[in-house]
Length: 64
Image (tube, rainbow, N blue to C red; front, side, top):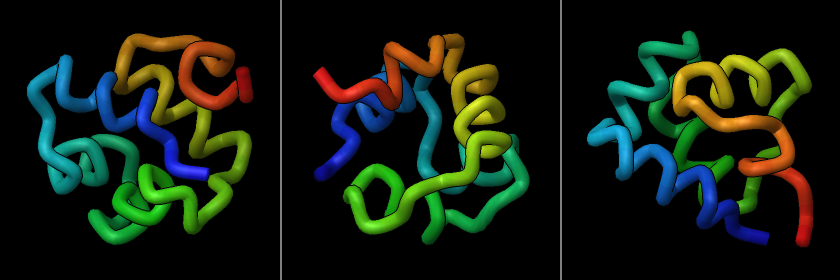
């Protein structure tokens, strides 16, 4: 399942995949795969993404 909420939050912050990846210490491909639903990030990476995007775990990763 694609993570459209993470993609939208990234765009709201005006960040490219590369910029977000650099901020959280992963590759651009990892960010792309998370947004595409092809990779399940670790809890630590989820938390780092939330901090970088100013969102909570629920807002980015909880299935509705």
